[in-house]
Length: 314
Image (tube, rainbow, N blue to C red; front, side):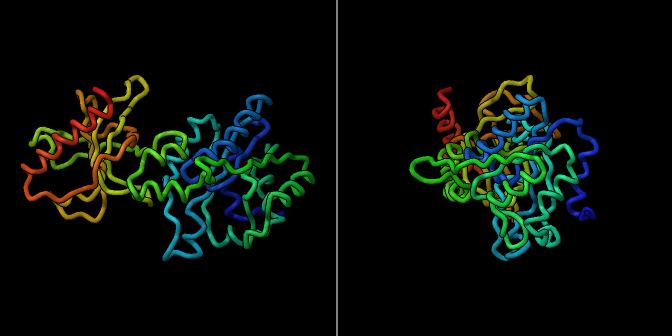
């Protein structure tokens, strides 16, 4: 068959070692506990069989194409998702652009096209409710039938339930919107995080005694604006450090349309502008507020620091 250009994007296969490829397929937004049953099955099978583990995921969310005014905002940007998947043991992450052309692929042609682009494909791993192909007409039963024709296997994982409800990206978004980051972390299986390079700020924090590490926010989905207890790490040689962070629009000192994550470490800060940091959100402390003066802001930050110290027991 002639390989469609959008599937040919998977042609990075030419750079992969020639080993059986165990490929998990899905959006995997948030890489939560349910996603991890799929991903970990691929990793384990690849290790046991001397193969490669991979993930085929998509960006943007399909709703951005079909319902742009009310599309689902992704919890994670593609880079953060790839980093987390790699930490779970995945060897290669392939992010396929989701376009109208891609969405028109008939269900019966999807797996053959992926196999042509990734000749080492040996097994596919999905959630049991995963749908694919034009009109989302393909289901796991069809995937199994197509895979059998090509001598491949299919693993489908059942949904994971926690607290009597199915773990889902929708539930996680709901918790984060309400500032309940602790409950979101329980569904995610690891702390919600932001990562990137520290940017230079206006140094107001330095002037009032609470210097901050500033990260611009690039994710589509924004958690509740407010103050959080966080854990910060950098290069693997540095131990994680505790901090207190404000995520929001900074209404006391400026009028902004894009949020910023400003983190004040509770101890000495080894990071500077340009350093890459990883910030894990552990506990919501209070909503973002507008203060009448910088002095009032400074007094509140002192209270926030004490609350964070109490949380971390430092």
